[in-house]
Length: 233
Length: 233
DNA sequence: CCGAGACTTCGATGCGGGCCGCAGCATCGT
DNA sequence: ACGATGCTGCGGCCCGCATCGAAGTCTCGG
Image (cartoon, rainbow over all chains, first blue to last red; front, side, top):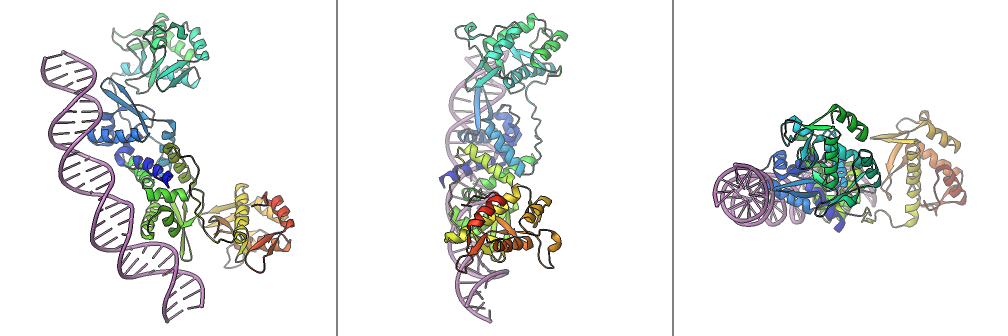
């Protein structure tokens, strides 16, 4: 009885075209802003805001404030599994039907750039992804940590990745939401050290002094060896 | 766009307390009548009927007419997986919260009985379950079939299970919705032959001439050997 | 053939909630 | 300090739909 009420409440969140469109747009794991989600759902921002508030309340979404933006993402893998289950019954091929272009149009910026003192763009997200799936990096609710194997791996690159190197007022390791990819990359002291080391090794160079980076020939080989990243990533 | 509409429509089916209660009551794989589901949901039969019609239309439920009853069950395992996913997000322990007693109160009838010329009750449903999971029996939309391995297994019991034995006007093998268990058991020519053979072997005897059956000592051993059923089943 | 029970359809009612216009905050850029 | 931008809260309109009463269809049992 009371149990089915909770189930209905959860399902009702998905049972609204606007909310379903927003959730579907988030199914690739990215975090999008309220305005972007409003466009994806075809509603006004106020309407989207109300929906997002409800979905956060219901535990479907997690929200992350960053400046004047509020990035929304699926609260857990369980939510993604639920949505896949619903799509399977709805007879939808699991093709995701949303390009939802976000961020800068500049291809070079999207590929690789700096974010303050650390790497960003597809390159940085790719690095974080690999470290996560190899158990070298762990992300928690509000922070992150380099594991022992991660410390060893970074050590071979010449990056000191021990928490003792954290200075006062600086988080040692933290996730930073990538502006163009909308997925976390590596920041904090470790992210800065890795970025500096990449410059030292000549793996990346600045494109005409902008934030955009060019991956050198040595960098392609280095990133491929250290993180298994193909040149396109 | 159009894809998310279908997803919303499907989710909206679950997003109603009454429908959620009905679906939850069906999650154990049984097939229940409209009236039973109305009671489970706490609504009038007319309301339940409308809900059930919508859910059949949406592909969530399958309906099976039998006399003046209409048995409703989940349309596919995908629906059950979807509901489990929703429950997981809703924070509900996967405990099913409905006893929903159905059928006869007589314990003997519920355990084992005849249904016209074949076996019924927990015993018969258990037999069908084992044959299904061992690939000896296959059920399709409107009928069923004994596979080669199933024919061999039944042969060792002395039951001829080849389709040539089907007589005119009699389906060789068909599923029959069990009255008390609300799940399919084996009927048709094969079901009748198996039942007759169980009597021959002395595995079951009628209890004082009623439909209820008693499983003999030899029957317990026989059913355990042939179908892996514990005495309780 | 007739009555009881299971189930459905139709129609009317009422409530919940999506949606947007407008206004109020917070933050960023110049 | 100013306007621009991203986001949220409020009030009101309106559509959709869940619900139930009453009546019709089908099936079973005698």
